Length: 361
Image 1 (tube, rainbow, N blue to C red):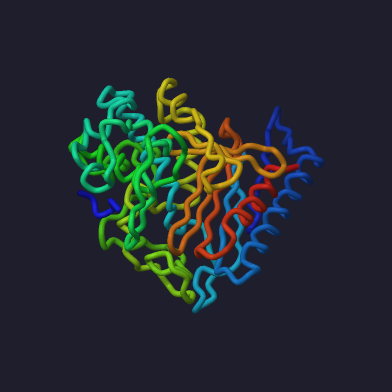
Image 2 (image 1 turned 90 degrees about the horizontal axis):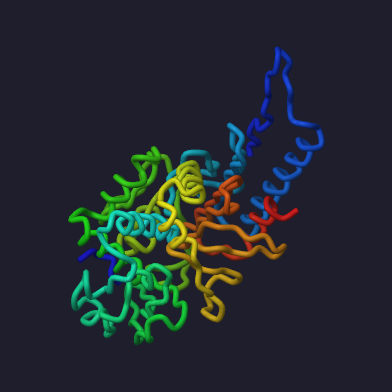
């Protein structure tokens, strides 16, 4: 059983050459674009103004060169700035990768979303969680309506609820889904993510670390105000910490450019056939769950409404030492990826301000 049960402003103007004449973006368009970049940079500065370490953001909107911005530092000891190409822990955005793999297996008729957990993992939830695996489906694992409670290392697990009644965000759901992937394929989850997603999309900085595997270079230092049991403590460096317990629920590592490539392919339907794409983006309400406000959850991805009323799609990840968001318009035309190398900023406020700076007019 897996151990995890439990700005630099870019040159964005596009030149078009027609009959020997160079056509550039209209002045009004360019000015609006530049103002948007200024708003993004201001949001980055605000994100670390309260003492956080550093933040990066990369915006892609169909042009050849993305906009990339930073604020704060990658290393509190040396003051080194954050930079493109850094590897960082993506936390719960791992679920989008796992959901994609499960849906690909469904498209191949290797499993169905209506299969029960007991069909693939007989006795597992009964023994470890006191639930009835014959009443929980794979779909309910992926949209967090299984009734299974969340769990952290060192914490007692509450009693499960009846499946299908309400949304309960739980890492247990996705670690079970990861185990099902391994049973259905006879391979490792890390290997399936590499074979099915990372390799075809050329995501060279994206991987699911094994036990004891640290962040690949280059990377920012990761800082936390929490111990491994979630209790508040002084700021400390957790770059080398083993977070393999998060596994299918939040253990992956990636980069801003890789997450853009993945999110673009996902939103545009390039990873799943139409039937499975529809399943992934069919959502359930999260209202009343105490989870992220103004969201609806699909199968590994979610929709989030910004205060201005714009709805974005993708996901976020919060794990010790790292906070990540990767979201965009449903068509995939505009996407924004950001990472903080710390875990004590106001998660929701930071990213509402950042994404609002780009997507709210």
